[in-house]
Image 1 (tube, rainbow, N blue to C red):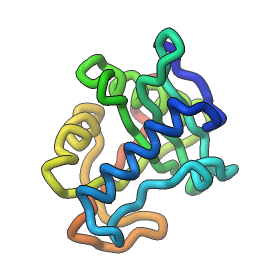
Image 2 (image 1 turned 180 degrees about the horizontal axis):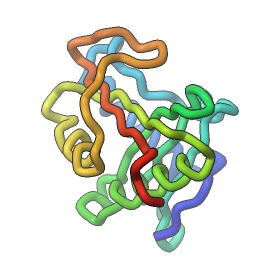
Image 3 (image 1 turned 90 degrees about the vertical axis):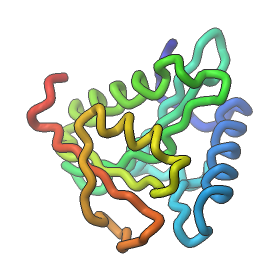
Image 4 (image 1 turned 120 degrees about the vertical axis):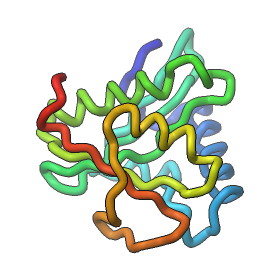
Length: 156
């Protein structure tokens, strides 16, 4: 598996992100969906990576810079045919290393509270993420779970 910065221009990434958005709207009320579309993911504050194997897109993840020292995880997704293969773990490890290399000291994320989101929350917990209050422009929402991780004590 290769993880590289992605320009969001191939059909495999487009399909994965469309699937991601569809699932978010199917599991959360519209006002509680904070997933970004392809155009929003091209913002200069965001770095987007895809994981591929033999040309097939296995997953993706993005880092949004909230400040020089604080980043947000966006669009973490594994393709259905790549689940249970360690793609999410590899993407999260890659993002953490890349964030540390550019001086990010804290990573935060927003995910849902429904049972659909439990596997993702369990993955984040395994990496040391803990629940926290809203950050950046988020507000308290019963459909949102906010999590954060301080990177200072993590080895690269």
